[in-house]
Amino acid sequence: MRLIIPKYVFRKVQTNFSYYSGDTGDGIPRHEHTFSHYVMVAHGKICIRKENLYREFIGGDEPINLRENEWHEIEILEDNTVFINFGEGNQDV
Image 1 (cartoon, helix red, strand yellow):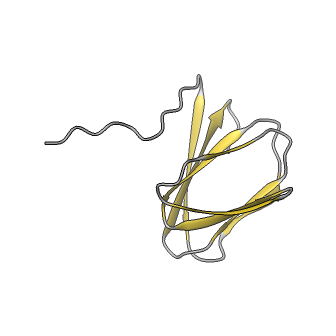
Image 2 (tube, rainbow, N blue to C red; image 1 turned 30 degrees about the horizontal axis):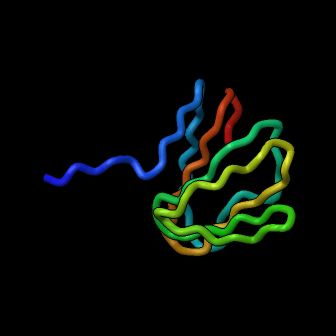
């Protein structure tokens, strides 16, 4: 057996993980938070829009940090996509 190691490791106290799954056109409309959070695609393809950025992500891409008080939206670009939002605090992300 070949040993594998994590590709990305994030350590935070009181981290929330929100698991999303959906199909093309589903997503989270434009919004912002008073806290930052990361977005990671587990499977499929999404795009993230925020001020001065439009970027597509697929499973295996490095997670992106969406900063506090920064508007953003997430749209699914491929059926059967799974993405995870994770960040600190008690808020849903």
